[in-house]
Length: 109
Image (tube, rainbow, N blue to C red):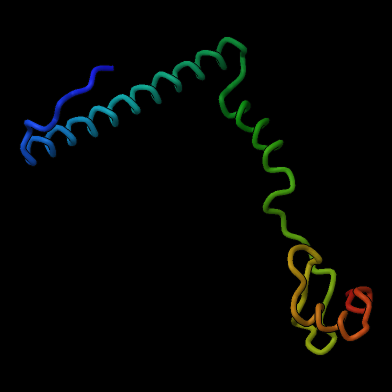
């Protein structure tokens, strides 16, 4: 790529040039996206499946185990409203109880 000497441009010309470049980048990205979308639709049609079917297969694999709610397994004996699923960082009341000689099983619901 050739290097362009921009030193002869004044500020307003540079900003106009920048705006034109930003607009061209946006147009090309939209064109590439439309082209990719058409290619995907064409491939799906050639294979005889819908795009929704393709996406459903992928989403089952990628979302396995993510975002699923887990029932609490432990509770604070002093305040039954405080619970913990057993995942992530231990709550302070669990850590203090274990440090005080209790077992994790003592907090099980």
